[in-house]
Length: 114
Image (tube, rainbow, N blue to C red; front, side, top):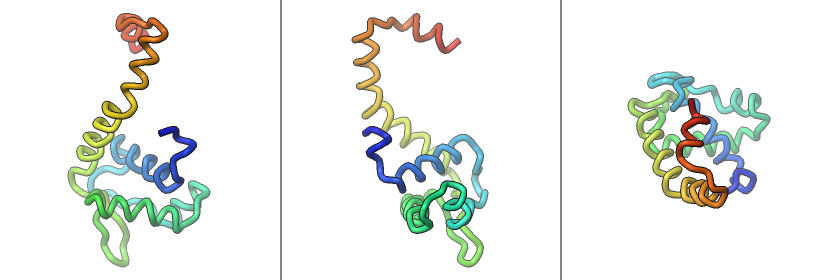
């Protein structure tokens, strides 16, 4: 799915997920408040709340009433596995086809990584 067609709350969810995976928000860290994140992203607070709610439903954050949302134990690993599976199942086949269509060989790709 192209990023442009993705709903805003999913784009926000992806940003938060990336920050958790990268360690910006490690286990036990408090996420920014809905309002603060909305202001930072230029988004509607209700949209941010929807993204946060999805994390809560997925067990990736823990809510402490009156305090905030905190990254749950194991959230980064769970997100990494999920993101990896999504990439390999949905994104990689398209990338692989393009690589093959362009005649790029594995050695060329590896040289670009180094």
